[in-house]
Amino acid sequence: ISALAEHLPAAYPELTAFIDPIDGTKEFTSGRGEQCSVCIGFAARGSPVGGLVFRPLTSPATYALGCRGENFVASRLLPDGGAGGLLTSNGGISPFLVGVVDRTQWSRIPAGGAGNKMLRLLENGENIYVLDRGLSRWDTCAASAVVEAHGGYV
Image (cartoon, rainbow, N blue to C red):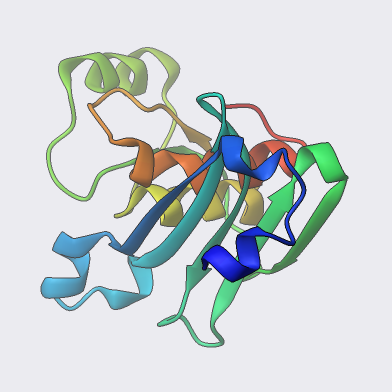
């Protein structure tokens, strides 16, 4: 790694890598592997700047990657022709989200893994995902960078 670092531009030392090798661990252990992803994100000075979210257990395997600052995006996603709705965890949801569903009459779409939910946003532009629980940077860095590079907002 140190030999490789000698060839990288001086800006790269400011990057921090956030790697989540099994985003959606609960889903993985409960037989819902299609909701799991591998997330590799890069942040500069605390802000997501690039990433890859890869779902290896969907058929076919799906991914999205992007770096907004480099105007680079690529993806292979599953088509989602369904009606949009509010993406939530598979389990219980917070009182805040219960209120959102009640007041808006949006459909609740249970899904596991932060990376998976972010890919679901790209697969159906009518979906909404509200991050209302404590998540770690390794959960959100890659997905945030990817969604923003693809023109979304986080």
